[in-house]
Image 1 (cartoon, each protein chain N blue to C red):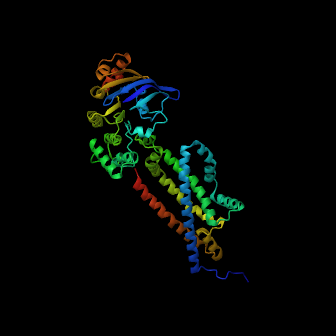
Image 2: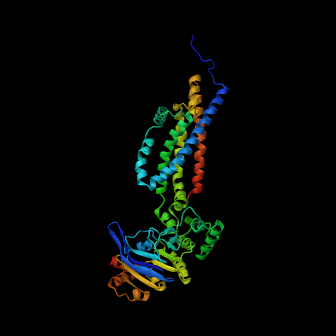
Image 3: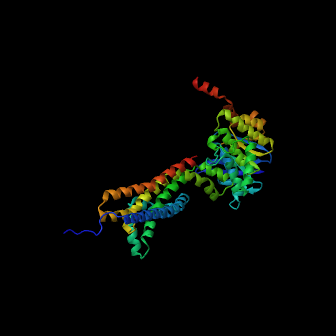
Length: 252
Length: 218
């Protein structure tokens, strides 16, 4: 269980998170939606300690992420994260990308790590790409590689930070498919996304973040289909407008 | 009657003398490259992680990079002699050239490390790697690719600058050539020969680096 209580975060004088409370139960898929700059990605990076916080507490399975006494590297093995920019290590092949952390962090033998990596590459549909360098893979394949790399540490939680935002539209499907697969296997996931349709169909709960606070939270049906708060309604109206309509309205 | 040397012309024994000088050049360049590169890697890394070290070592780097090698050699030689280090000219040369190499390598290493995009380091840390594992498996290999070509340039510079080590009394290739020129006045022949052999040392280094760059290109 991830328990986020009253988390505050500022970059210098800019306050990004103003006291966030959120609990993610085991096996749950929680989507974080909200406008750019609402603090969704920052919150996600606070969860695995990549960003320090100025107040509040984040507990992962009862262990405080930002406690200096916590072995953060050990805790991070429980928390896989996938970024918007795929960040596959460019000097390693796909298989080596996935096998690296199991070998050097989890101290598995070379052969064991490679076997594990192959298993996870197959899991995301890249079983035949083990010898390819990231530069030889498409954006969608690189993103699936990043998912396999995170999964190879056998985490209890997966965090997704706008993983489809940098992809060409025709490559989005394969990545979402992989995420649905994980969901069907019971993985606990926190997903920051702009993809309202994905949130509607896959999320157990949706949290709408607005100006550093959780503005509205509930099931997808509650938040997306019947939003109660005005900010949520406004945000969803904007998101739901088709790109063509935006072009039309700006031309007209 | 004019005074003359006993044997003025070039003899086969001179070839042996030159070969020894050539060997000394290779030894000096290799030792200074090794010492300077190892020190430079440590120094460059420290300069990326610590502001204090960066400020403290800035004068060392700037002076060594900006003062001509021949002046550095003479000053280092005088200073070490005054301080009473009775070391051989080989060690004087190695220390002076190695110090220069460490300063310039440090900057190449620092630039290489800074060129590694932060997102890769973040990804590595997010997988549970600690700072040293990240440095060893991600930053260093990526920095190596960026730094390789400029570093090879430094090695070539160093090989050529080692020709100045004659001023501290080390009989390297250039010095032995000069000695023979003084005796035989075969300036053209000997200098052409010297140039050719410097080329023969440097060219394989630059060829090999090109091969290596192609191999590790990302």
